[in-house]
Amino acid sequence: MDANGLSDPYVKFRLGHQKYKSKIMPKTLNPQWREQFDFHLYEERGGVIDITAWDKDAGKRDDFIGRCQVDLSALSREQTHKLELQLEEGEGHLVLLVTLTASATVSISDLSINSVEDQKEREEILKRYGPLRIFHNLKDVGFLQVKVIRAEGLMAADVTGKSDPFCVVELNNDRWLTHTVYKNLNPENKVFTFNVKDIHSVLEVTVYDEDRDRSADFLGKVAIPLLSIQNGEQKAYVLKNKQLTGPTKGVIYLEIDVIFNAVKASLRTLIPKEQKYIEEENRLSKQLLLRNFIRMKRCVMVLVNAAYYVNSCFDWDSPPRSLAAFVLFLFVVWNFELYMIPLVLLLLLTWNYFLIVSGKENRQRDTVVEDMLEDEEEEDDKDDKDSEKKGFINKIYAIQEVCVSVQNILDEVASFGERIKNTFNWTVPFLSWLAIVALCVFTVILYFIPLRYIVLVWGINKFTKKLRSPYAIDNNELLDFLSRVPSDVQVVQYQELKPDPSHSPYKRKKNNLG
Image 1 (tube, rainbow, N blue to C red):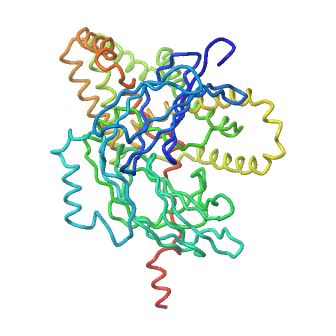
Image 2 (image 1 turned 120 degrees about the vertical axis):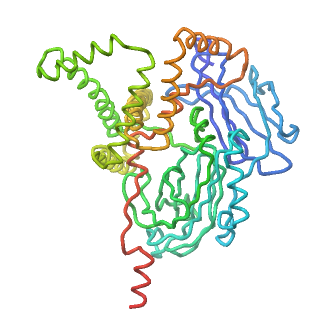
Image 3 (image 1 turned 45 degrees about the vertical axis):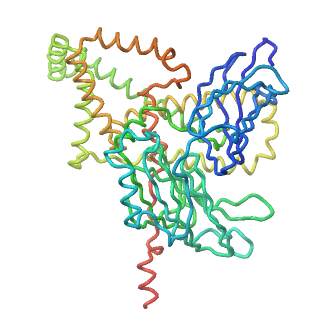
């Protein structure tokens, strides 16, 4: 499709309202994506997946390459089908692996119907995710039940001083809407259940105001990591703005229960995360670019300061410290073994754990990141108001795309450093404990098994992986693990805001009695 005789192809999939988009493979006519997408099929008679192939063009409309369809009603259940589909209206074909399999589906019900409180149902769920079912369906990690009890003090979005609120509950690509409660700022609602495929997922609850003539108005949102949930506790969550950086008007009362198998959850941590198919495209933002630059600079400064510290030992700025460092250097080099590397990381994790348990380490809120996020939100609001006046930005679309790429690279580099730091800081205890177990295993392996054998096994595995499983999805277990650790920005976004005491139901009862 391009002047160089090549293309930059990507593929779009659609099943009903569910959409996916593959990654872009640059400069190739024979792309290999090796990506996996999960669709929810609710109809017994099956459905049709519409597939279109496109060529990415920077600065102008993407070129259409071809289309094809998959009729799911023609495929048998519980087996994988290899399909080679010829592209219509174009050249070439797509190779797909399609599997139809039954699962405990997502559901919505009234508050009176409650799986977790029913003793028989609860025992069945606990049995399904118990220690005896570790290797049964590794993708089914756990069970989540969300009770949306009520919301209070919502923003009045209509001219009548009221709102017509409804609630959207999302877990990765599972998405449910409640019914709309008309002319009400204090609605009451429903119970949702989800299958948990990744315990490191984040539950998002968003409240909108329904407008019949135009798109729904945003009223507020909360993001709750599954590992931070306290089972069975009715909790008031202060609604946040779209960027999750600060409060907006209103409180939503939720009661959440999550039951999961810790071993399955640990194994799933080492495979790629499920990508969301509904995500806003990144746009150029001066504040976001500055924020990512500062975040990356902070990570780099940690290494620079460490280098200065080591250099000061060489320069004997502090004789006692330099002498201790020199003795330690001689001891480590003379006795060094490869197993000592994970052992040192293990000791660092353990040391930080005891600091946190003893209360000696007071982790301060990252006010720098919070301030930058607030500034970014103000800039976004300003951009929305001035968007009509800034039509010329379309003329420099290509430059903007380059700047967005730089912005995203800065974000990825900064996030990588922050995730490593937050692993050792016990930001997510589950992941830090998992790191301790892994480091213990590596230490023992490196202590007892010569390095040449380890390298030999690693090399044989790498060379034969595609021969053993031609359609396996490439992944890196360490990067998959780090992708579950929140960056500093995500830590700020997932923080719970303290509700206004006036929203407390107990206080309201006392006032009524008075």
